Figure (cartoon, rainbow, N blue to C red):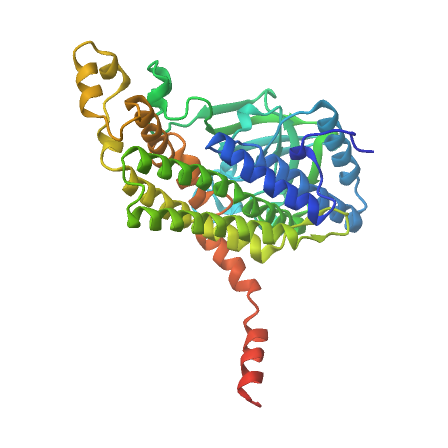
Length: 419
């Protein structure tokens, strides 16, 4: 029995419509925040774990699925925030987990007790939002061999569990948040965070363990999670909407809105943004049911969406910076505008279109700076490249799923080829 009212981030997708509503929510939140809002990993993790625990139980007669159902129901009833942790440090990329010089370069069970409880050692990288969460779901990061059962661990852990250490990552222009200027932050209301998370003998009771050595299901879990998560990058379409609005606004403020090349760039920004959104929505609309009842997005379209995201935000950022002009990177700071000597001079020389205040011009320029080279450029650019897998990871899936032989058949039939 589900909670009667819950956050959509905690809902198990029981239809393609549920997947579509997730996608629409993600784009809308991108529009409202202009940054990574840090809830998608947890949502995608619980949906991927739902079907994977069911499949493990069907093969091995374990009780992981009921445990996981109990955890999800608790989360819904308490409205907790869930983070997800999959990416390991990896060490030497040419070596599997079992061959690394340090075994903790992939998160593992350092102890597996007779009662089903485990002890975690290792680390997870690039954690967006985990320290904002109540619980995290720890998952294996890839395919494992028979010698690597200790790395086949999936479990739920409170973020403040004894033995966990977080180290907060630096961000471009991060000290802007501390210098007292709301304008110079660019986006003073919303921002993201990234941490490295380390496990030093973290105890996990049996009821919070959802995979324990079932190596044949690690790749299944990873592929399902990445299918959800690559489709979740529709959030970048929401950020693209903000970028389109910022570009149109600064062109108006500069008195350049009627220039044909400006109009053409705005069309291109919209075109790229809608391509991201369209492929994500296609993945959701074409979602299919698993034996567990949860729906999974279309794998090919999810990977097409994420591959678009590794490219298009960079093109959008370049065009928005082009439209913004050089003042984007030479604009003096807020203190200079408040200075009794330089302030009036800056107000005099930085005026543009009549009726537009210098302050509003500064605000939109700082937002563009924030999203294309400042703190939130992490979410709009670098995360777009590497989050949910770097570009080659999507190309591998696209190559596997593009079904060349069938399409050769279409061409040969039309051409009249008989072999």
